Length: 262
Image 1 (cartoon, rainbow, N blue to C red):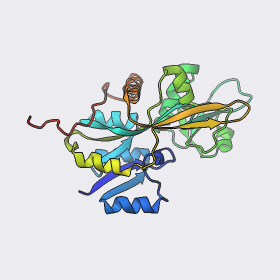
Image 2: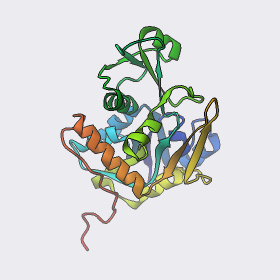
Image 3: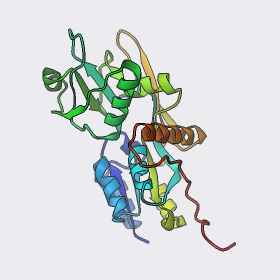
Image 4: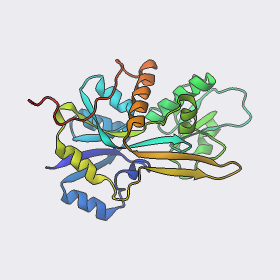
């Protein structure tokens, strides 16, 4: 069975699927009939919505938008969930300002941008919209009061880290990516194909440490467990409260026996 999977192209998703430069692993997957389509977060959602792929690695925001109109299922095997300091999204503030007039980001409508906007509102009462900007921190701060960047190799230790602040505010990891398919496509072959994309050496989590004037630590979770499921449901509630969905959603898990006669 040929299987098409859409994944957002970034350094965090590559923890649970092979990177573009991993030629041997990508060749192995092609021989198994598994096609990885690397694209943007938004296009992953659109490709699954249009049934151009069998499953996609989605954010809670993308999942909820699809769940507004379709019956979706979450495949509870692998995920990416930052906890505490991770550099998933980093917020830099311009020095010497008395208030926040504008916020810039190269991806102003992405899931992490949306959560950053919610966090700034909840913690600091900042209600500014996020505007599309250049991708260089200094260029953004030349035009805006806050710069939001994503998946940096070396995030600034002096900056505000989204997943660190999220943990302090909500006492749970920040769910980032997980596998989603349509309810009418819950077949064992699909789950097996996704299982085949995972590196043999994948750990349950990876610890992150950034040393500077102060040490900041965090963790990336890669394997599904109850804590991640609860964090996704809570994040869906938060996004609904802020009117990103038409209805409130809770996740329903992949079950190949669903709808079949006993």
